[in-house]
Length: 91
Image (tube, rainbow, N blue to C red; front, side, top):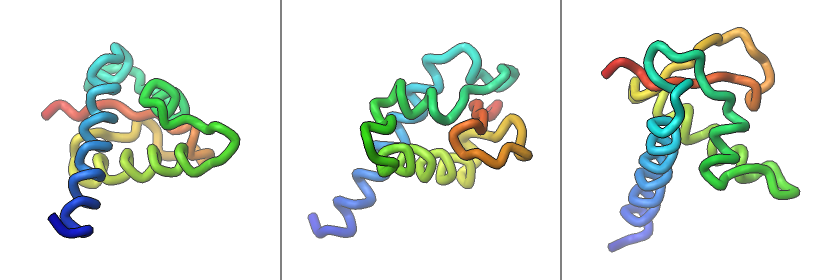
């Protein structure tokens, strides 16, 4: 396996991990109120531990899942990334 393939495998694993976290939270259901990004990061073990790198990783995975229509933003007006709320789509 080359580096590109391994990178894609890691990204897909992280996306699956985030989806698992969301599927386990009642507020993340398609009709739910949504879950704050910072809570998703904390539950996934990708929370800020003295550096913003892990929070950034969680945010990137959420944006990829949003692009793939797996999740949606509850309100798009929030400026602070950590205060955005996400939920699963009805797919």
